[in-house]
Length: 88
Image (cartoon, rainbow, N blue to C red; front, side, top):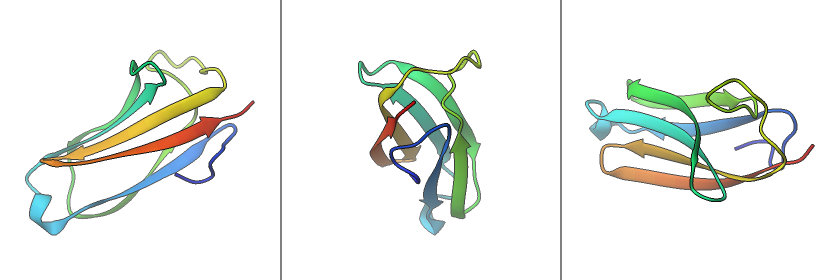
């Protein structure tokens, strides 16, 4: 993600590979306790590069507090987890 640390938003980039075009892609934000904060993507995406903005809000639209958050990108059997810091 860029920038990291961020305030008030960050952009998460990921690639859907050609061999995963029939798989569902999910991009989920978690807090440090492993609780789901927000699901940004949950759909079948065409192969390519994607840039998704997270504005530091939860699934209810409320701003989250400063701290460490994780994003997880899943596509079929592929999984990537990244760490990001929100500083206010």
